[in-house]
Amino acid sequence: MNMSNNMPDMAGIEPVRFGLDDKFKFKCHKGVKCFTKCCRGININLTPYDIIRLKNRLQLSSEEFLAIYTEPQLLEKTDLPIVTLKLMDDEEKSCPFIRDDGCIIYEDRPTTCRYYPLGVASLSHKEGADDKDFYFFVHEPHCLGFEEEKVWTIREWRKNQGVDIHDETNAGWTDLLVRKRSFPKNVMLTEQSKKMFFLVSYNIDKFREFVFESSFLERYDIEKETLEKIKKDEVALLEFGIKWLKWLMFKDGDFSIKEEKKSD
Ligand code: SF4
Ligand code: SF4
Image (cartoon, rainbow, N blue to C red; front, side, top):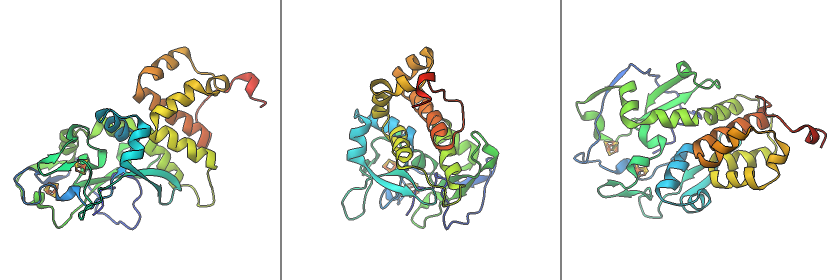
């Protein structure tokens, strides 16, 4: 089973495409015979916002969360580092957050878990280009939710599952992945760019240290107002980091380097 379907890598999948107003029948509840089956033997790619929510929920630093709960991977066709949720070492390869009566971090569950049984794919690297996204169903034989009578549109499902805030916060990051994937294979990023991609995307506490405690601020001209905001607000820091990565990886945007550093 694969629940990494919210990611833009669609290798080997030729899904039937659905739009926001398409309807489907589905209901997941504690009474279904398959309850919690979809939380075992899974592959969940974590997004930057997933990690912020989860590490705060668990009261860990991003560094601690990465060490305890994740495994590093490379995202196919992009050569970019991503992280997946590390599964338990039990027979069923269970998610570490599943118990007999459900998910113990449900309110902060990752984007992929919110979408399930749907997946979403982004075809455009232009942020907010919703018309270029499409949806597909992850029809797994053990999932009996499709036998229930409740009808949803995809739009209603997204709202009900609280997907929008995740997608909005991750939009710039998804854009980076889709853009890198659209590059010819021989266009490689430097190891340093990949390292910075990992830092911003997954280790937000270390990225804050990097901004405020390294020579970063000697090099870049950042407005005082922005600095005050990103010091306190992790989502603002992530958005700032993505903007910086876009400039670093694709020379897109207007990140200004201080005059005296330009000749370095
Ligand atoms: S995070 Fe929660 S919903 Fe997602 S797989 Fe784990 S237990 Fe299931
Ligand atoms: S109905 Fe589907 S989503 Fe719900 S618990 Fe069963 S397998 Fe998981």
